Every structure is written in structure tokens, then in C-alpha cells.
Image (cartoon, rainbow, N blue to C red; front, side):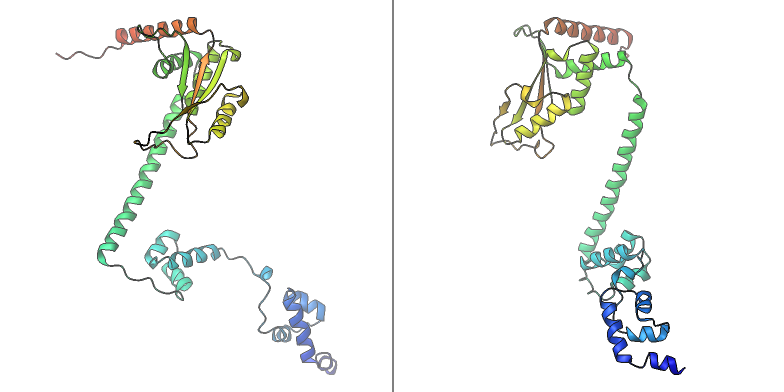
Length: 291
């Protein structure tokens, strides 16, 4: 016992050493081993008032929720809203934010507007989920496209979006213009099915004068698998100050123009294919006549 009292006689000296080690980031176990102190009560008294280093704290699964709750409370959210948003108990929310100032009470009209807004946001989320579910189910219904599926789709697509010959303007050329990357991919797959060699295709960008022309050209070049330097001269659309453009933003990349060289014969076939489709549909799938 005499030995023990002698070992810990210089209490203040031990405390200075223990505090220094604590502030250096050591744990209690490391301080104990360093100072050879095996009395836990004495060890705790030596470092009393010194916070433990952050690395010794066990992660708390609710730390993120607590931080989010405090953030929402500072934004003026009520306990009910925070509880519903985070899925926590009211007692937890109260414990986490009770030291923060209470939000100002809203008048009845404002509370009604807020409640309506929350209900509408929920309704929009439900509708969007249903919309995405319908699209996903419809995508699965298509499955793998056969060569004939692609052939028919391509003919219809060209006749809807491609250039067409007119009696007053003879232009038997295969020219396709579109701004939808998916449409462009399907159209190119169709041309490949028809045996059109890539060397016969030329590309040109049509875009508004205020857009990122070079960025759009790189996007389309990557999509179709060619070097952007092979594109023909860009067609710039001038701005009409009387109109309000909605095709703006980073996703606006203008339209891609694809021309098939020596395409007169192919155009005549496309027109014939389309006529055959129309005749077949009218003959085999005619709508019932009204009596």
C-alpha cells in the first residue's frame, strides 16, 4: 500500500501529463498504458474536464437525423412536420431541437395554404410514381424488335419526320431532321438495316444562335460515332425577339440533319413502302362505318 501511495504521490504532476496526452488525442486506454496507471477512478479524475478525442466516439446512427431535424427547425418547421419528414418519434425531435427558438406562428390562412401545398406535393409524387411505373411496364412489353419490326417503325418514322417530295417541289432525297437522341438512334439503326453504308451519310447541326454550338456538335458526333470535324457547316437560327423560347438549358442541343448521298432510289422505295402500309391498314383494319 505504501508503494501505491508513493507511485501516485505527485498527483498534480500526473494530472499535467494526463491532460497533455488527452489533448494530444490519446484515449483513456492509451493514457493508462503510457503512465502505467491501472486505477480507473484515478485515471478518470486526472483527465476530468477534458473532452475525449473525436475518434474515440462511437458513431451514432441518429446523428444525421438529429442534424437534419435541427436544420429543419431553424427553417421554421413544426414538430409535426419534422416528425413526418424524418420518421422519428416526437420525443426524439423534442430532445434534439428543444434548445432552438420556436418558429413564429402562422395565421390560419397561411397554415391552410401550406397544408394544401403539402397535399399537392404528395399528389404530384404519387402521380409521378404511377407515370414511371406505366412507362417501365410499357418498355417491357416491346421486348426484342425483329428486323421487320424495325423496318416498319423506320418507314413510319421517316414519313413522319423526313423530307418528302412534292409535285411543286421535286426533291427525291433522303433527308432527316430531329432533336431527339432516341429518334436519331432508331433512324440510324433503320438505315443500317436497309444496307445504307456509313460513308453515304453526312451530318449537319441546326441550332439557335444563343446555344452552345460546339458542345452540341460534340454531343451529336459522339451519339452517331463520327468525328465532329466531319460535320457540314452549321445552320444558325436567328432569335426572334417577339417569341419566348422554351427550348433552352443544358439539354438543348439543336437538331441533327442527316442526309443520305445518292438517295433518290431509296426515297422512291420509302414512298412506296409507306403507300403499301397505308393501303394494307385501310384494307385490313378499316374502322367501322357509322350507320
